[in-house]
Image 1 (tube, rainbow, N blue to C red):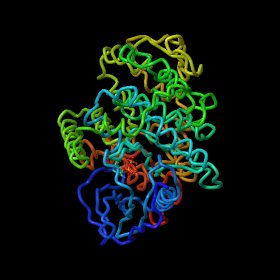
Image 2: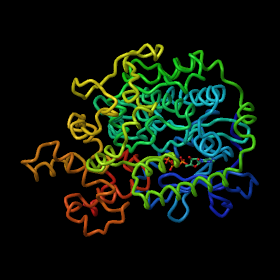
Image 3: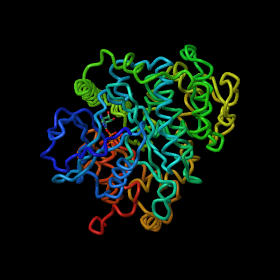
Image 4: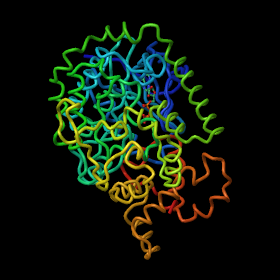
Length: 511
Ligand SMILES: Nc1ncnc2c1ncn2[C@@H]1O[C@H](COP(=O)(O)OP(=O)(O)OP(=O)(O)O)[C@@H](O)[C@H]1O
């Protein structure tokens, strides 16, 4: 048994001594700490309940999931309790930190294949367990794969996990838009038929690419572009010159996960039998290879934070909004940019070269894969799925699916995701109806676009430092609670705090 059930972790903050910060999430800070009575080093995630916008259901479920699960590859909480205005979740300390942090500090170009196979196999074992117990993780990414000092791998962060056996409200939440865009499966974005545990398999495939390259595909782009590219382009893969170092079995495993049709993706159990995982090694191999010579976690985290601050400063100086996306990527989280004008101006800034040299954008390189053919040698794929597009042939000039024609791209963008996005901002069906009735002459798309423009971080003037009055006209059409929600998103999360109980979050007072 991995956990000593007799060991009782105290439920009082006084019994813990907080040391340095080792991680930061949307509404939580993670500390290395000492459990004084047990003389044991632990990690404590301190969630600011005030920042959580009353999403106590979601938090309660995360903690519940974290304490009930029992698998060596899933991070289990020792205990949790409230202290002042925060919730403390006491967990085993994972001294290696997340794979994302390890890559950012020591392997910016990604890991070697045996390391990747080992990390992915352990992660997949966790997914097999979670899926067998009815859980969809919904946020599989290298930032949520943690390693302890012995090289043991555990999947963390159940903040957005969902239970497939839930009915009613929570079942409806599986039709909600959660996750982090680069890792998000197309069906989660599309919101047409809901989604199931196969969404985790897509994110797992993206995580494989992330571990291979040091970053997820499209990570340099703002979330809205990521969304469009994921929906319109062929799935990313290990198809390029730089990927020659990887084995055929690795490429096939990734291709099997990154099939747009979820039905054609393997289950986690079946995937675990893929011959790629035969290359996996033991824990101590990870400890010897990637953990050796690493600075202590707190120190690495401090350096990453300093880099992040530099990026932000550059962004302020040069107004480069793509850097925001980069900065969010460093933190392992993401935010949204829905401003069409802004996206267009970004598109205009991108040189044609960006596309011809961007290996992650199959349409730009002219190298394309058939998104529906499932497993196979990627080089054999010929056609690019341009699902929402005209029949115009792709050209190098038009970059990733005609960014200069982004508006028309958005016009053909399925309406449902936009509705789902409204859900993220607490606009329920009632509110939607109210909005529509107030603009009877406006087309649905106009409403969507108006909404998107109004909710842009830059439209809100938050990031640019524009004064409030400059934006007040534009903001006035936006419900106040939506503005508040959006501001919170700027702190970095796509995942709405109300992801699990969308309507509850709006208190009567707020209305
Ligand atoms: N048990 C742990 N030991 C060591 N580091 C940890 C531990 N738990 C979390 N961390 C670090 O803290 C970071 C943030 O934690 P976590 O992901 O749980 O917060 P979050 O608010 O749910 O984040 P997000 O939703 O943005 O991914 C992790 O990416 C990881 O680097």
